[in-house]
Image 1: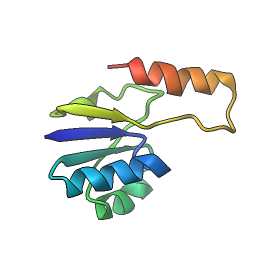
Image 2: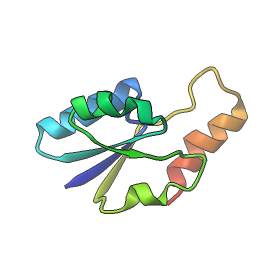
Image 3: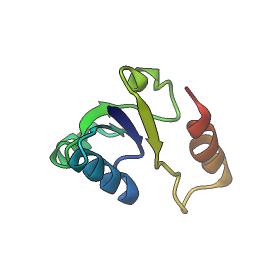
Length: 92
């Protein structure tokens, strides 16, 4: 089963990618920065570069399930919280 992990480079996301691989799933790590590719592959994830603030429909190809661990972080304003945390989660 291919499982897209949105927010895979965060603290929880990294754990999810690793655990999915250990349990026999195929984790697909969604990252914004291609420089994070090597790190995510080392955790067992196939990488897809995409951004919640833009069209990321290509990241959904061949995906059976999605785990959403993304968050705008505590250092952003309410606009980013709305854009990433709420709207990013409901986009398809």
